Image 1 (cartoon, rainbow, N blue to C red):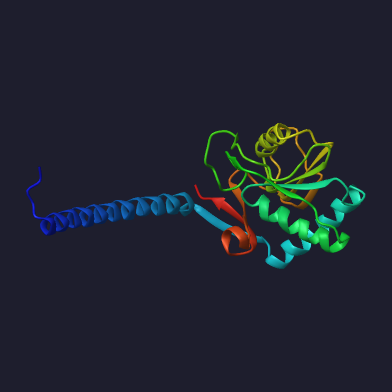
Image 2 (tube, rainbow, N blue to C red):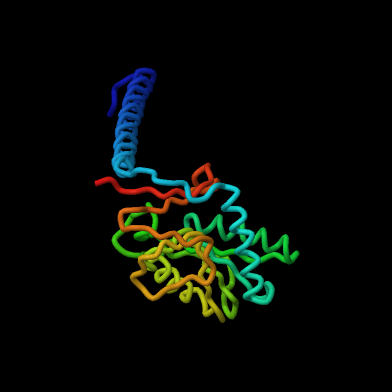
Length: 225
């Protein structure tokens, strides 16, 4: 049985709690420093070569793509936009707003959450891996526009298509990408393309959007040897 007086016991536990808190803060700070160092080392060998698109150019491209979607699908009946996380989601949401302004009709927007080897800077795994979750829109019998920011090898799109059909069987699926940089490893092509950019294997397309990056532009960067 503890023979400490209540006040001394309370003080003892307060000191232990404070010490634990301080230890946790130190560990957290060390972890954050390691994380920041890892991010800096991952980007330290990247050199910006050119800005490919400005904010206004991205916006004009999305307006053009919205008109193409409406034209190729004879309107918005049975139309659903599905964005591939991360940057495909805000692109899909923007396209839906533009289409609504043109057609005066709301278009459903869904989300595919995928953790995978991305076709841009986000390399977080060796192969495409789809997270379980609600798509957020009914796609059965619908005309689905699958939206992503960069089309490269085609592996992202392949994973997204597999996931899409797990949620239902759409009548039609079309791919839309803001940037097509070539170098396909799978027989996959986009029906709607914002811009074609010829790249080398050392070059990377970096899409930055206000919703995810607090800035708006498309950059061409290169890995330095």
